[in-house]
Image (tube, rainbow over all chains, first blue to last red; front, side):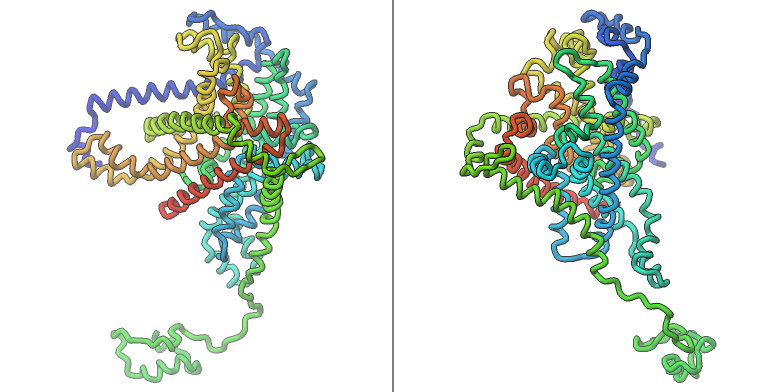
Length: 292
Length: 339
């Protein structure tokens, strides 16, 4: 930037703009974190303490928020009496199962799609992606009917299969882009050296392994956070955490402390996983259209 | 090729050496294509194993399991959806009803309103998210705290939309919600919760969506900003352009493709995710926030009119597929510039 001496970069206007940006950023970070913070704090509050509010317009009274004796009784209640350990297990199995199934089948399919051309490949691809884009509510109407006939409603295998409707197309779509980046020459070289087709495929697996791992995590994230499928197809026998959280809302008394605690239990593991795969997050959430 | 490497016995090589007895080594020779130009080994033995060319069936069998599973969970239900949409479906009993499900739709005000509200909801969400998201990305880009802040902003996206809905339901609550207190203290709102009146309920929902998903737009825009060619920016500056001018004529054109993707993705997601709406208002008060997917959910799984639900779902699905086609076209156009 030798041009720095020639051109005036800092004008009062740009300085003001930068100041405004800083204020805006600070404000936005608070706005983002505040609901999470309140959720977290409220999960440690007794019911009455969670309801304490200052009078309208009493800005100094905000300190009420911090006046409480922390208690873990909501967490205890969740796991001891409300069966959240079962729901946690259900969530884990459903999300993990569908992620593993999707990524294994998906990477096989994606690999083939990336290596060969055939007539109708574009159509096949569009079908795969539109399965992913379809509104969950719309897909669920016939799926519920079919699953009822097969006795899959309210079972974990049913839920895993239901989650596969959005995870499998996602895995195929994303992993195809991934395999496209691995040059075929590597496999060719392996085969020239006498490897069989399958051994050659195994040889490139270490190259794609980190990506595949990351997308297993992303699939888990999508399935874990789902509510609609779990509420309808998993209803009864395969209740997951979001559904169980929703059911804490009773018409008579809403157990806010427990709800917030359940929210923390549902959210924390996913935030952690999100941080772990931070590098692949944008690619994953934009269906591979944007790369960081 | 020098004489030293030329074996005497090899036929292909002898051709060269035979005519090359009085060669000028420093002149570039033309070697005809028919001549093997590499040193040829004395004896050619067959390799102990030969790989046959890869047959297509290998790839085919790799694809089959995924395609079968996908067919079972997408094509098969699709035909069921068409079948159901033409019938009265009760539990354990299906009856043909002469397209009644579809005929009733144009006169169903909640169905029509559903589309209108969906459009309204999407428009509000998208406008706010794009404006705030892009501005946020610009403010973040290149600052020292960028990494930390982006990670902080990511947090809401990792949250289940349902849990987000619950938390905001708590915050909006008319008697003990902190955000309600805030809005009241600022004089924006009366004692009635934002979700309780049909004028403001939609805004309440939009705020939740903005809270959760604006960071996605920011992330996408940041990725786009990193790809804006710096040399163009600098050249423009040297020519005396103001930073604002620079933004409008260099940065923005480079951002359009990524923004388009962001808009399409969020738009589709507004069709897909209704979890937070179900918790926050459930379509109410009255029908003020009953956007089409919520209405569909209610028809199918609250009143269990699965036939009618299938008809609505079919129409919703067709619209989504058309939108998806557009989206894929955008993706494809994006492909060449992808690094």
